[in-house]
Amino acid sequence: MPEPDNTRIVILGGGFGGLFVALELEKTLARDPNVNITVVNRENFFLFTPMLHEVAASDLDLTSIVNPARKLLRRVNFLEGDVERIDLQKKTVQVSHGVDHHHHEMPYGHLVIALGSITNFYGLPGLAERALTMKSLGDAIHLRNRLIAHLEHADPECGAALREPLLTFVVAGGGFAGVETVAGINDFVRDALRFYPNLKESDLRVVLVHPGPTILPELGEKLGTYAQKKLAERGVDIRVNVKVTGVSDDGVTLSDGTFLRSRMVVWTAGTSANPQLASLPCHLDHGRICVDSTLAVPGWPNVWALGDCALIPDERTGRFFPPTAQHALRQARVVARNITATERGGRRKKFSFATIGQLAAIGRRSGVANILGVNFSGFVAWWLWRSIYLSKLPRLEKKVRVALDWTLDLMFSKDLVQYQTFRAPSVSEEEMTQEGEPRGGKAA
Ligand SMILES: Cc1cc2nc3c(=O)[nH]c(=O)nc-3n(C[C@H](O)[C@H](O)[C@H](O)COP(=O)(O)OP(=O)(O)OC[C@H]3O[C@@H](n4cnc5c(N)ncnc54)[C@H](O)[C@@H]3O)c2cc1C
Image (cartoon, rainbow, N blue to C red):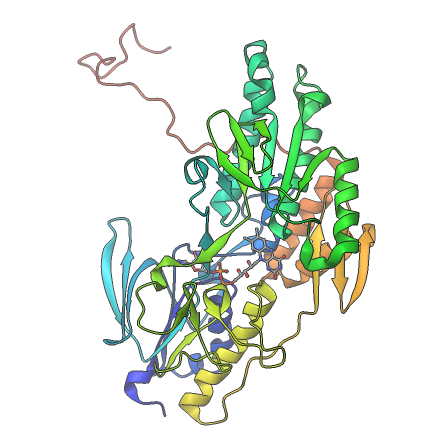
């Protein structure tokens, strides 16, 4: 039996790292009624990031790629809240929670830190205020709404003078997120054009800005060049070896001096560690928690870290594991196993994993992939992308929803509805008679 103190396991973050630790523990320690396990996450759902660009580009419905944490967890508790402070000395976590943001102090016996990363604008002028990002479900919804808003603004005659900045869409960063996002934007706005009679294909400009010589550097030069060629054929203007250096209300400035008149820039070119970790007394490297190969935080017994917020040594290469979902998922299994081993006895396992493959969808039913060292491109890679990620998406219900969305997408054009959340108009006090009716007579 575990020590009473250690029966309380708190998992911070409900993403690929944290949620999957909880799912693994469901099979072991969570079966013990004396063990209390809680996941704390800002949102009450798990977001499947690899399909995020499909929400932004209106290929998938807004909620198809998110799963409510409570439907995934049976024996593990869930608390929707914001982690505000981690006190490793006192072994407590401060969480603000609820509509009134009241505070909870959560003591722990084991602490799992899986708080992911945040966007980094590197202090570039105008970016933090104006750039859109692609990290959360809200980001994808916001991007989709903005694309539609720009088309709506530009279509009538009054929008003619602003068509160039409104219809120039700039994506910064030629990694997976940037390439998939630019491909999605390109397909979406070109498909939507036929519903906007005053707009022409030549009014659209979709630009991808990448600091290196070839996009998708993780996939190697051959596939990167292929992706570049395909995107360029579909009208994407690819600028390599340049960086975005600033954004103003009028446009985007690049490091080669080019100025693009644009009202929309999507920034996917930088992440940094979660700021919640900055004050931790353990060893940090560029804000990430340094852990040993068993994913334990040295010097702090029963504290574990994984995923994008941890720096994990790869004993085979002498380097560190990359921050990807496929790594976070496998690290989760190791953390769960090592917590169980600590409490129930047994040897701790070291984390070791070699990337199986990497895939990117580049629009119009084409993709690029490297799986077990073999390159795939075009339709086959796109089909692999869809099949593999559909199989990884948690829960049958969501798999069915995504498969249905994809099937309907073959028959119908993309949805152009803007998701607006403002309140419907109501009668103000000044407009009201003493009887509570609107001035100007009763409604018929
Ligand atoms: C657009 C996009 C596409 C991607 N595509 C791929 C892909 O195709 N393949 C791949 O392998 N990887 C992909 N990744 C990377 C992958 O998503 C990450 O590596 C993975 O999510 C890391 O898991 P994590 O648990 O460390 O962080 P996350 O999954 O980000 O989870 C962190 C969780 O912590 C929560 N959180 C953060 N701060 C707080 C706080 N203070 N209080 C409460 N909760 C908090 C967050 O809300 C989030 O739910 C992609 C990432 C993005 C953004």
